[in-house]
Length: 293
Image (cartoon, rainbow, N blue to C red; front, side, top):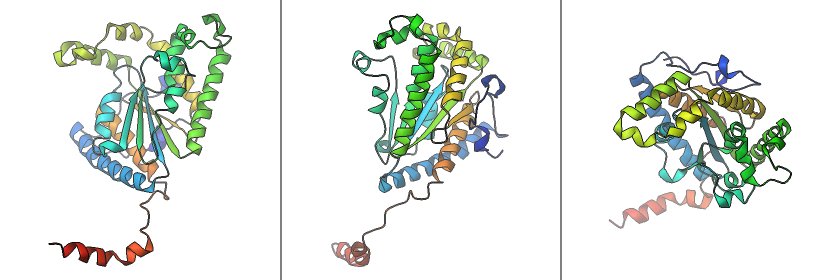
């Protein structure tokens, strides 16, 4: 199997999405990719247990991608061996009336993972510079001072949002949340095939919406918005990784590898030492319990 070079997927300093590949098989069969992922996800589960015991960090995994890019199945497969109580997943849809009564980052703040846990944002705070940039009329629902029409939403508005998002990620990073951002990069042809599969397989029909086809016509607009957002917000404390995702098995393995290898660099994350008194009396406690038989 081809060695996964984490640096090759990390965005520093900027990229053109059209120059990046969407397909990767790591010189392996699907069976080999799945087997490698089985071991990695067990190690991720073990790490999360230690993270919980340590109690000083949380991990935020942000997943973005075009429709059908494989976000849902990646969450299912990569975190399958984690303690079910150790992973919290949020999928951000159209803002509710309550959410629109607050600033656009509010609903993301309150969904952040507590210390000791993994949090997965399946679609993220970046929707506020992606969907809303392709459809700027959505911004008017936020009822922002001095924004009275689409004409008021200029490039300075978006630049300010990139800065606000970067500050948000810096703030949570400074307070112990380790941030990883993944863009699942698929080709337009692969999306077409996956949409067709949803229509051909009855058990997948529920996942299809005619709106998917409408958004597909805006493919180039979305690619441009993703490229701009990634280039403006990939930082040392909250880096973007662009993952070739036409092959789902390879995509999942690459994400799991990036997470595990990056997290293992935090040498201070380890199980806490037992209190000296407890440690000194372990044999006594064992004997006490054994005598109960």
